[in-house]
Amino acid sequence: MPAITTAKLTWTASTDNIGVAGYNIYVGGVLQGTSATTSYTASGLKGTTAYTFSVKAFDDAGNESAASNAVQITTGDPGNVQVINPGIIDNYTTWYVGINGADKPATPTAAELTYLENGGLNMSFNLQTENYPSFQVDPKPAGDWSNYTNMNLILSNPNAAEVQIQPIVKDGNWKWVELGQYIKVPAKTTMIATVPLTGLTNKDVNRFILRVQSGSGGLAGSLQLHTVSFDLEPTAYASTIAEMNRPKTASFYPWNLVESSYTGNESSGLDGETLFVKYKSTISDTIAAGVATETKPGLGIGDDWTKYASVSSTLTNTGTDAIHVSLVVRTGGGWVWQETGGQTAADPTVERIIAPGESVDVVYAFNSPVWKSAKTNWSNNAALENAIDVRGVQFKVYAGTGEAVSVGTLQITNFQLNF
Image (cartoon, rainbow, N blue to C red; front, side, top):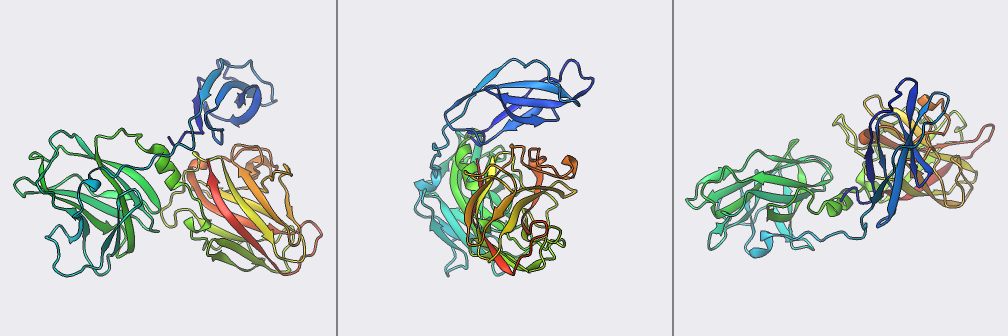
């Protein structure tokens, strides 16, 4: 499950609601985090481990109530990631690319099918040159779907734009039956889709069609079909899908956002899987450089990071002077700025100073009180807020107070989010 190392807690409000400023959440008697509401998500827990949670209300002066009743939660095994069964894809060796559901073309198409490791199918396509390329198969004899209520598809869209797919069947009478609306697969997302078969009255299937189109004009890219199955549970393969959706490389994001406050930039961007910031000698404690990205450019929404525990990365200073580096997360419609220097195995402080030639592994834990913002008066004492709507991510480079820095470059490698 996506929550395999995450505990989602809810509780009733304090009976003495006057003066309650928030709630402290304890694990085994140790403070885990705080919440201004009656819910909290504890992430980054160890797998196959029992945890005991309790909650205490506190007022503006920091006075705490007695602890709530304790509740014990046992996490699952994060190593138990299932291979997706390809379902009926594996029943046929005659899958082909069709164009808008028509018969198998006599000449090659721009779109091509290849097999995935699990036995599913990958389609590469160019929607600028071909309309409605389709995953297609003609079962012989006709497929019998009479025992099924729903069809399930697990799809991966590795593109930077939405892809849509329409399930279609030619039934036992070769009647064209569209099964519901187009399924919208967001950019860089793996999802499970449930397609009701109520519109298919004759459940003998002579042709099965998955017709592909772009959600935003012509697109050259690919789409992965991991399974065509039936009547799966809604949480089927949840841990596998969560792992497939986890940003594991820097190139998951475009890193081309221009942050106007980074006036100390010489250049910045993404080179393969390495982020870089080439900074000027003008950086100071008030003039910064940096590299930035939107998580979902142009969509007016952000990534949901509540399922993750942290971001981690390796920071390497190739310059000749020490630099300060922090991670900035921008959340919500107001692009609220929240910042931390993160922590290392040897240094739990939250001001990250990288010496010349030094390379350090840094973890930015979301639930730890290491974040600062205008709300905290720029003091590092809060957990990351509004992680459900992360609009932007930035690495910021600056100098210490009164320090002079020569031109140099920060390299950021091993970028990933962690459960």
